[in-house]
Image (cartoon, rainbow, N blue to C red; front, side, top):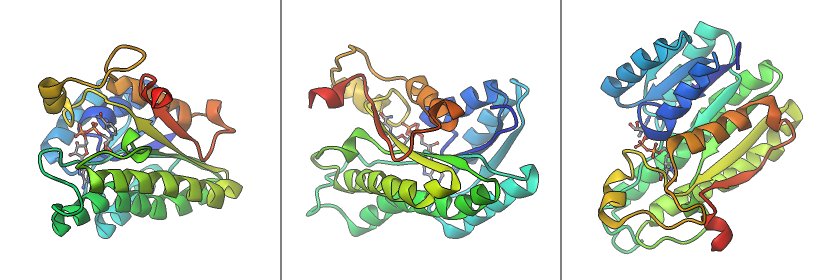
Length: 246
Ligand SMILES: NC(=O)c1ccc[n+]([C@@H]2O[C@H](COP(=O)([O-])OP(=O)(O)OC[C@H]3O[C@@H](n4cnc5c(N)ncnc54)[C@H](O)[C@@H]3O)[C@@H](O)[C@H]2O)c1
């Protein structure tokens, strides 16, 4: 990963934060994005201890202008972009999110942050990757993309959209040596899920444990590296075996 420039969205917490530290340990140049300024500062301080080059960029990945300036700043500072990890995401587990009860405003918000962000970040990253003769895009979807999930309609739709978009982009940009893959995490212990895991437990898995941020981060590293050079359009369930059972 030395000499590689990676942009990770939603890097202030959970999977994104762990992934940023794995890339920093491998001496990549790490551009960390989040909407949470205070937490992102904390992550920056942590990553600097590894000796890696770190650029924090505050921004909302669902906003065109924020994403455009994030990619411009990445190129201005580091001259190129090799890897994009579209990780930022939200869910609303506390309310009734079936289509009848779901407020339009919440639908728009979830679709914008989870799905439109992948379109926007890729839109501005891909031309830079073409200039750089290749790249790797890793989209974080969910098990919720692969099956129905009661009361999570906007979330499942957003993640299902990521899976479809991943496949389309893989066939569109393969000729530029740009690989596009998606990961479908199972239940991973992060600030996003801790509360519900503590209240109702985590779903049982053939491997008999909950997922950890590094389980996803290490797969992201693999998809970013040349070790996965012939893998594109892949949808990888990293879920302790749950998808195999269902
Ligand atoms: N934790 C799980 O069990 C699990 C399972 C499947 C998929 N995922 C997906 O993994 C990704 C990371 O989830 P996590 O569990 O680490 O969650 P998390 O809440 O710990 O981290 C998500 C980060 O995204 C940031 N973010 C939210 N909206 C943003 C925006 N508009 N612009 C920029 N940053 C924004 C948040 O501030 C936060 O730092 C999400 O896409 C989530 O849907 C998580």
